[in-house]
Structure formats: C-alpha cells, structure tokens
Amino acid sequence: MTDTVLIKNAMLVNEGRQRRTDVLVKNDRIERIDANISAPERAKVIDADSLLLLPGMIDDQVHFREPGLTQKGDLASESAAAVAGGITSFMEMPNTSPTTTTRQALADKYVMAEGRCAANYAFYFGGSNDNIEELRRLPATDACGIKVFMGASTGNMLVDDEEVLEKIFAAAEIPVTTHCEHTPTILQNLEQATQRFGKDIPASAHPEIRSVEACLKSSKLAVSLAEKFGTRLHVLHLTTAEEMALFKPGDMPGKQITAEVCVHHLHFTADDYAELGNQIKCNPAVKAPRHREALLEAVNDGRIDIIATDHAPHLPSEKNSGNYITDAAGLPLAQHALPCAYEHVHAGRISIERLVQMTSHNPALRFQVSERGFVREGYFADLVLLRPDSPWTVSDDQCLSRCGWTPFSGQRFHGSIHTTLVNGQIVYSGNKIHNRHSGQRLVFDRH
Ligand code: DOR
Image (cartoon, rainbow, N blue to C red):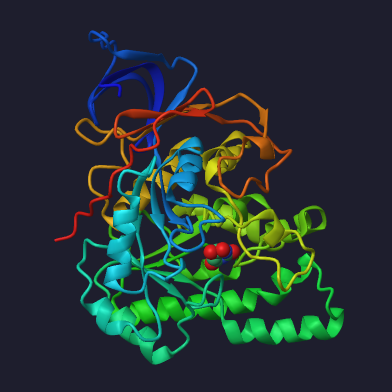
C-alpha cells in the first residue's frame, strides 16, 4: 500500500482545459492540486513531465461474465485488463448466468465483487419481459442503471413486449440504458442472407443483417418512450448516421436523453471484415465508413455524450470457427480503451478535453456517481497518466483479459498508459498490475 503519491509537473486535462500542475494524493483522495508541491516524507514521487494526467475512465458498458460464463473472463481478470486500459470504474451488464434480473442476483454480484476488483464497480439490473414488480422494488442506489435489450444479443434477455417496455420506461427512477436493434427486422434480413449465401454467410454481411433500419427503428422507439414517460434514457453503442438525428447537441447536465458510442465503432469500419472476419462481429454491427464519420461528428457536436467499450470477451474458439451463425458477437476491448480512443486525439479528430469529458465527466454526471470522474481536491484519486507520443504495437501475448486475444493485434497506437491509480493506489505501471483489489463499490448521489 502506498499512502502518499505526488505527481509532479503533469499536463492535467480536466473540466475543459489543460494546465501544468502537481497533484498530491493521500490515502484514497486527491489532497491538493497546485504548482510546486513539495514531496511529503515517504511519498512516492512520479515525474510526469512528459505525461498527460486524466481522470480515470468510467466505462458504463462492460460484460465481465461473472457469474456463470467465467471461462471467458471474471470480475478479477477483466477488471485487471480494464485498469491497464485506463479504466478506473466500470458498470457491468446483466447478461450473465444467471441473468441479473432479480434484486437477489444483483446483491449476489456485489458480494462477488468485494475485494476482487482492480477498478471500482457497479452493476446493472436487467429488465425482462416478466420482472416489472422486482424492478419497481429496486432501491435507486442499488444499480447503476436498468439495462433493456430492445434487441436480442448474447444471452436471452430480449424485451420485445411493447406493453412491458412502456411499464419499464414509466417505472424507472434511475437511468434506463438500451441496446437498440429491432429483432424481427434482423431475422428477416438473416433469412434473406441465408437464401443468398446458404450456410457460408460472410462476416461482411453482418451490417446488412443487423442493418441500419433495425437500429433506427429500435432507437426511435426508445427515444419516443422516454419522451412519453420522461424517462432518463441512455442509448448504448450507437452505430449509424441515421440515428444521430434522434439526439440533441449540448452539454450533459440537464439532458434527459443521452447517447453513447463505443471505441470499436469509432475505430473499425465494414472495410475491416475482409481481414478480421467474425473477430469484429458484434452487436450492433460495425458498419460502413460513412457511419463512423457521422459518429465522430456527433461526438464533437455533443449529440453523443459518452464513449464506452462494451468489452465483451469470448474465447478464440467461440469467435474463429468461420461460421457466421455460430461465431459469438462481442470483442474484448477494455485493455485498449483509452489508447484506442486516444488515436482520434492523435489524428486531430477529437480534442483531448472532449475525450476526457466523454470518458470521465459525462458518465459520472449521467449516472450521478459520487466524487469521481473529475480531478478535484477531496475527490477519490482515480487517475491515469498517459504517454501521448509513444507509438507501440499491440499483441495478443500482452492480453490480460482471460480470453487471451485482442482485435487490435498488430495495430500501432500512439498513446499508452503509463500509470493508473484507483482510490489512490497505483494499480498499473510499467506494464504490470500491482494491486488487484483496490476497487470499491460505486456510490450514487440519488436522493
Ligand atoms: O456484441 C455484443 N456482445 N453485443 C452485446 O450486446 C452483448 C455482447 C456480449 O455480451 O457478448
């Protein structure tokens, strides 16, 4: 345990601006932010002259597979991968086994997480076709949000009964997050693809099967339900130019309906199926380049509010059979979260201030996370030091995620994670995990 850490001369990126400063961390908190702080006795001093200092990423969408699917990953392995990628807090999805669709299953997850996570944690409560009473009894601070699969994906959690959707949107007092893809449209497209290709459907057909229309139809429904019932809606992993018309530009506080994009949808395009095949199969699908351009535009004008990962590990054997139907959807992404997103900063497509707003400030505001997401005196010391100009090549053998592979293998990134602190503890530095148990349960300011 390190009690005191002094970060010297870092370029702090926080709350819309950059400034050179020292930051003193004592126990689990940020004690002081100032120029020229002298090192207290026994402090660990980090020379951050050439580094950017950011608030740690709060990833509002991960699948860490515990309980029930731990051959793919568990809370310990995936949270270790997360801190290596600059994630200091995560919000985990309910499509585990059993699903997190009862208050008991949710409570069980918090017990499982205690003392085993490198990053701070919270869990979603899953809406289903038949758990509305359970959802109504859910205390507002128990889950980060409610997750509704308005399109079927990994796990059996589709909510396709519109009456139930209305009840969920009407009852929810905490953010409702949605996976939006219209399943009947997808099934129709799949039928057509099967007629065309027989059993050998190529990965490149995925965006035609999980089509723009399927996404738009479902997102439209989610937004209209939220408008009807005044629900605090957060639409997850948007992928299409057409859906961007559903969201309004502007800053987070005060927004009722918010939007998310994930790092892989900003990184890959349909052109990558030729090389990567089902490795980049995910739901919603990676789509044509014009969509990525539209997503980047919406990131910059504030129609999109949050960048997340949707970290969804599957074993190589579940991804690489070459059979489109049986190969699993989802990619391991947490370990490369900030380096991947930082590529857009390096290329001049997103400012570093905007990136920090979308990976740290806005998730904290959207979910009312207490005392995290900003570098402020008195707040928890969840911090990331990033090397801005240090090209490196990703390889599978550095993978911390239990699945042991990454869709970025062989790619060159320009930013790398130097150090990650969670609750004042150095959990990652020198390419190593140092403290696997620093994560605490997230607290939500909801009264
Ligand atoms: O591609 C995906 N994989 N999308 C999801 O919505 C779920 C995820 C998973 O859990 O594998």
